Length: 386
Image 1 (spheres, rainbow, N blue to C red):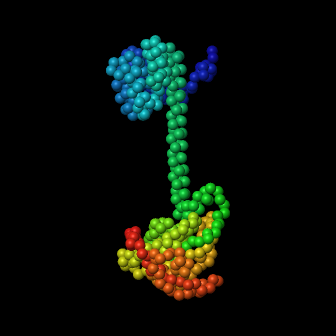
Image 2: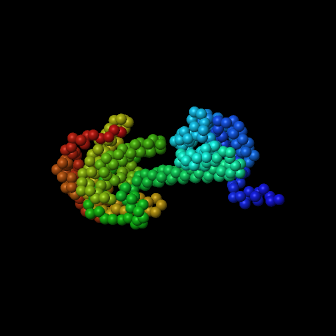
Image 3: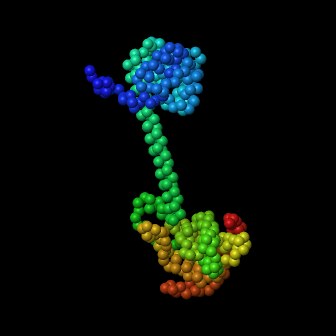
């Protein structure tokens, strides 16, 4: 006699042991038929079998929280009949994945077509063939398990994709905190070396007067907190005027406009930022009972900009325009904005300036300078709150 396992393999049916853990709901208004179907199901290894005598109680059971793998459904029932039951569960996203096999005494082909159209997995006539019932039950549950795995995989992929997108967004935000947006875009597009000359841009340097003595005696956490508060507001002011923060060196803040994308009003942008930096620091001192002053130097001219480094890379600028701006800051006065003649010319008549005289710039020579005092703009007083 041929071994049962061999017979099963030859039949092409799925292994019962892998599927009989499923839960089945038998829905029929005839108690005798429910018992008969349940008996056949237990014979082939199913132990989790529930019964319902009509469509309404079947819906309640499906919504009870139990995880059903299959419904065996009669069509002709009181109350909610089989056709209405099918439409109800297939319109419910939570119940829609549960396969339904209709087991009906109706031998009209139109009834079978209607059931399949309404979402039934299969259709069996009463009285049913036990072998055929067995084959259809295992086939339906196997397909449900495969669909469940597909949904689980898709859900995992969607979660992973979401996490990847979040990480990508986080990386891009970090990149934009380090680099100008235009430069970050070029790096992401694969450019390895970024270096370019800008015919005319404006550079600003600030230095906090009185910060070094304060840092010498204050707690480290207080030093960092205070400097972060000031520079964070400088960042806001720079962003407000379309100015690029280049870097900070100790208590020095370096910023520029006209790079990496040229703008015609680069000098005005840097000047407006500098004026608001002074106003901001005055308000900061009043609020926190401090006595800091800022010294600012601004110069306009040609420069070179680019990316340096491979691991801790940075966007930086070089050239006489940068050197002169730095020299103007260091030779300036607390609470004042020291600008070059080229910056004075680029600003135009909307800005009030007073002559300072000449300063000697190493490697360049004497530079005629001015103090920028104000701008004829009623909106300049609208400095963001600390």
